[in-house]
Length: 185
Length: 167
Image 1 (tube, one colour):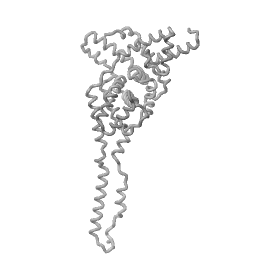
Image 2: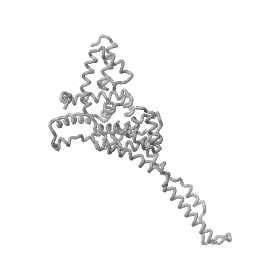
Image 3: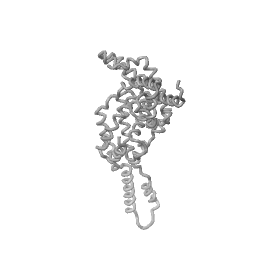
Image 4: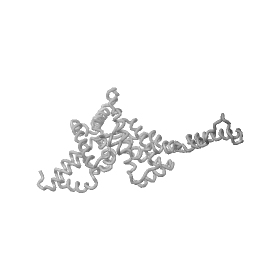
């Protein structure tokens, strides 16, 4: 992605250019929403976080200074903060367990797929928040170790340690069902 | 066990990287990637460890996020005009109110002065309000709506917030 182009878009958006703003939204909203969804496990909460993140971004746009951080990094830092706040305030991941508990009628194949998905969701949700955030940023959002470390405000070594501990736990949790998880539906 | 101490070091680092970043070389630190790939090509131990890490990656890769709803994109699009409208400083109510009050006070003072005896003496029962008291009203710092709006915008507050939140 051309970062200088991103910054030019921010300048134009700050001046009220709707087309520039729309482009910024198209470039980054999906990624911010996905990160929030991985962290909160709830689509509607993830949408709220995405909206709040972009609202804050608008507040920052007028005084945005190139070189402070990339726009993507800044957005994810704010979104991560908001998710952590929500997570700490008790609105924790509820997963899609209600689908299972309420006995929603699903075809056997779909139920097996949902079951596999829930196992992974549960394993991720059980991780301490810093480890989960590190996994989401590096594995699902495609940030480099250095970028993820900046977002989490830790050193690169500390980030590696978080990732290693997270993977070790995930492996332990998922190993008993590993063969099942690796099956295609 | 490896005999070559350099290879041992490389294998240890290879395992560290794979245990953290997984089997996909694209996630490995860019400055080490080439060296680690070359090492893996020459080490069966490294390749075995690499293959094992790939299983967890495969499981995690099955956990795809839902797409963003078109409705969300529309709501985000609409934020800009709403936001810029809110920031427009034209309806600056505190300033306008203060100015209106100043004019009213001056008008009352002028009316009072116009109706009084111009002999230069003030009747005993009247006390003149010192004009400075009215002028001071204009010197009160006025609240600027735009300034408040800017103060609410975050300025990389994330660093401290996140560090604290994640403790």
